[in-house]
View 1 (cartoon, rainbow, N blue to C red):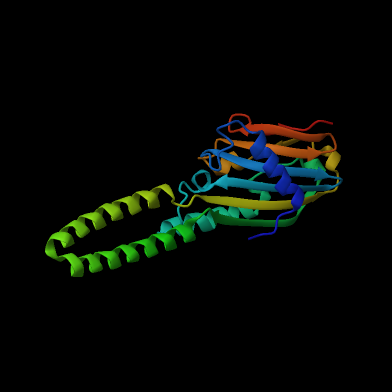
View 2: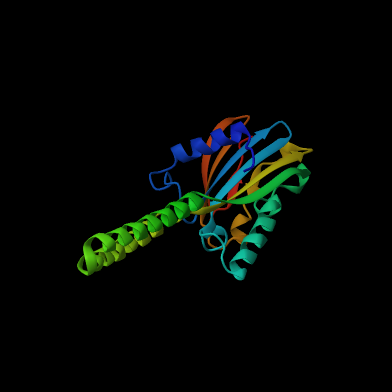
Length: 220
């Protein structure tokens, strides 16, 4: 896991707390979050988006096609110019960039599920030895019910994957940046909006950027 700058973590927390009830959910399809700080000649930025917005699914990539989609998305997100467009007069260059895909609870949930099924098999075997064919039939029914319940829990607890990208840009003339266009929406068709929390010389501001209104205007 990439180590995050403390100020950007605080921005994302503020973003989550300041959103509407729907946006406060840990996972809102169509909506990503951006934390951005502009300090002197540096722009630091973190983007977090649901997998569904980026590649159309959130489970771990299984097929060759899904794996290719994730690889291509990570390559695109590694380049901040696939996410934002800055005025040319600002003369900005990328100092640092990273992209990754994360999962909320996939590994732990899978392990618990396997252990649970093994325990159920062991109990069915003991019931057969102790109680005979009649109890074996009941044990089999219980086992089927247990497996159905486990499948239901597995579906409910299926990990939600997110894409996270981090950037730092250095700008020769940062005062020339009066707006930031999020070209992110041009490249990721399932994305609908971004909650952006910006910290700059004027303080902290929260904005909602959408596919229909993709430009963030900065106060001078």
